[in-house]
Image (cartoon, rainbow, N blue to C red; front, side):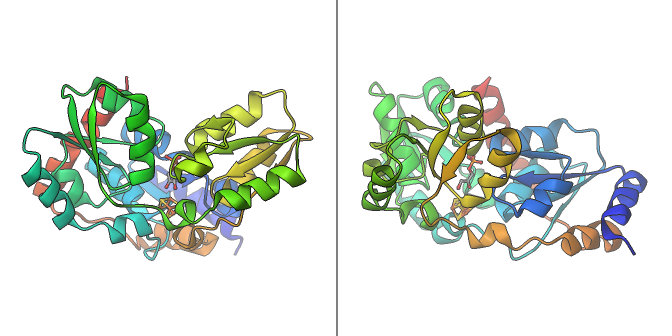
Length: 299
Ligand code: 13P
Ligand code: SF4
């Protein structure tokens, strides 16, 4: 059996699409119908006329797609695709912040559990966070889980009081400024493009800060031809696909949760209906308000 041909056939039979994040293995990005950052994938899932979505990313991304389009059947490529930022951030921390700041609006990064989303006024992604915090009707905001993204946004919104959670991404937060400086010395002409989940002293070295989609776009349209990319190395596939004769250098950045999906997993989702996202309906409806507010406030 030719698995790729079978995936194509099953996609037509089921009116299915495959969505993949830029951090997914190259062979998954290659077979996906849509590849993008977390904001683009959420919107694509919501607006698609497909009946069946196979989501190749981490769990919160597939859950968000299901929450935004409850009428569709959403499957996650591999059930062990976890995001450590989601796993490590506890509800109790947000409950505590809300008790101490009852007058604050809660903005949660989409990299959070469905339960955290039910406690939030709006979600955000890295590409939409600034718009959400600027546009939300409150001058006092609790921003969780990511302290690095939150700190980056807070610095750009001096008129808002932003109270930060303590969450972080082990992949981005682990990169040290020293490692980036070593790359800068080795490749002195390279521009430094940084994801905002990185620590402040790393962000301070950046020529450009943005989401995965924004980094890709920047590198594609830029006249420069050498870049140090401070985000997960899976984005190299799209960078190489969309550019010619450009060089990309990375610190050591691999997200284990993003690397678990295989072609066989995608086939099994389509063929045997494995790994369907099932959410409590009441919780999903409540979380939908925060995700829909994200889309409204980002426009
Ligand atoms: P993007 O919103 O840039 O896709 O980032 C998602 C993510 O998990 C980064 O670590
Ligand atoms: Fe989560 Fe970090 Fe992986 Fe992004 S890179 S999915 S934030 S663990």
